[in-house]
Amino acid sequence: MQLVLLYLKKNKMLTLLPQEEKTRHIHEYYVRLTIVILFFVATLLVSALVGLLPSYVNERADLNALKEAQQQAELESTNKAYEESEIVKAYNAVLVDYLNARIVQVSTPASPSSVLYKILENSNSSISISELEMTHQTVIVRGVASTREGLIAFHNTLRSHLDFKNATLPISDLAKSSNANFTIQIPL
Image (cartoon, rainbow, N blue to C red):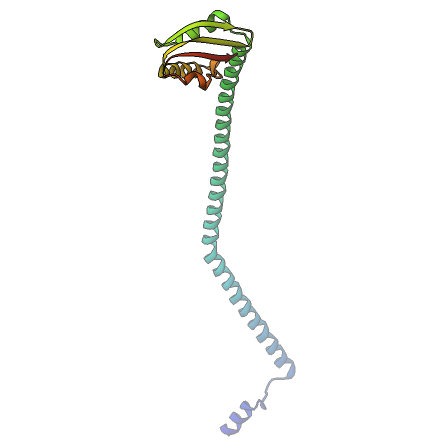
């Protein structure tokens, strides 16, 4: 008899419950199964959130630190650019002052005595100036040089001054090595 009951159970032929009870039990089974699955999924989600929360907080802190560092770098860059612009402004002011002074110096005509004094001051012992001719735009210096080297040195010394930088000495005046007559023209 037990064999028959076992066979009937295996083949689901033995049902002692009425159909309504059977459907109610099946419905309760599926409800409980759904609750267990939902509980499992909820537990899985909570554990994932708990596991990921520290990483999220850490990454968020790193992102905020990077933003602050970027803002600090931009602020320092702005401050450096401001300081550089202030330095450039100071250099420009100095340059403008120098150029204004130079314009005043150039625009005021040099007095004949100051020009002659500068020429005589720059002559060396091998130079003997015999004639100085000054017009409104040119000074002509004539004389005799005892050596060619002395004449070259006198010409270079004159050209080293800003006022006489365009002084010209003809090459023909350098032909003689001693007692050479020379003529230097200095445009003003």
